[in-house]
Image 1 (cartoon, rainbow, N blue to C red):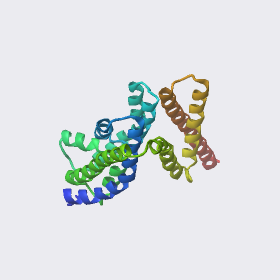
Image 2 (image 1 turned 30 degrees about the horizontal axis):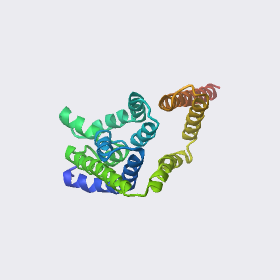
Image 3 (image 1 turned 90 degrees about the vertical axis):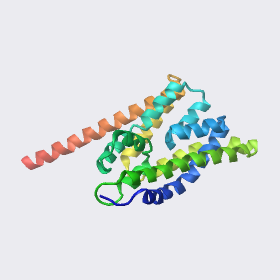
Image 4 (image 1 turned 180 degrees about the vertical axis):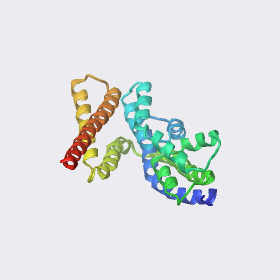
Amino acid sequence: MQQDGFKAGIKSGSMIAIGYFPIALTFGLLAKTTGLTILEAVGMSLLVFAGASQYIALGLIAKHVDPIVIVLNTFIVNIRHFLMTASLNEKMQPAPRWKKAVYAFGVTDETFSVISTHGEGRVRTSFGAGVILMAYGSWVLFTGVGHVIGANLPLFLQAAMSIALYAMFVALLIPSMKGNRKVVLLALTAAALNGFFFWTELLSTGWAIMVSTLASSVFVELIYARRSALIRHAAERRESA
């Protein structure tokens, strides 16, 4: 078992805090331009603590989408957290359920990466608490700072900040697409479906995003499952020949 405790977790989490600075700051700025008060923006970071989902929520809030649809979209985007927390449950030292519930709330892509790769064997709960506390605290703090900065920007700059939302998603998507045809196909399929729903006006913005996300995921997985089955069948035929 790792002997590193809370202080070591704080130190490791500080690297995440540095990375969160520009993202959370931009979120606070965009929250201001979307019309959220500082209490609403900081409250979202306090209660949701999920970068990509919060950015998506801002876009949906700006379009006055039904809150239920926003919650459903957040759930779908963050559904991968079930897998991450299940994996961490095997990595962390045994702990009461209430402690697991607390650190499960703080699991993000970054905290999961730091904790799950922390040495050999089990990781102490105190180490995970330090990592998550630094990540969570910095995200909430920088959200507030971004909102305050946004409140002091000229109106034309506040309006121009809306493009940062799209730039953020492009910046997240492009690295994932490099050398990964599955991600490229998934992105193109989702974009095509969402474009179809937009131009035909069959679904509202929130429902279009949700349906496009689910449908493209199922479609791409079916294609790759079929492809794997064909490859496996061809290999079996060669072995039996």
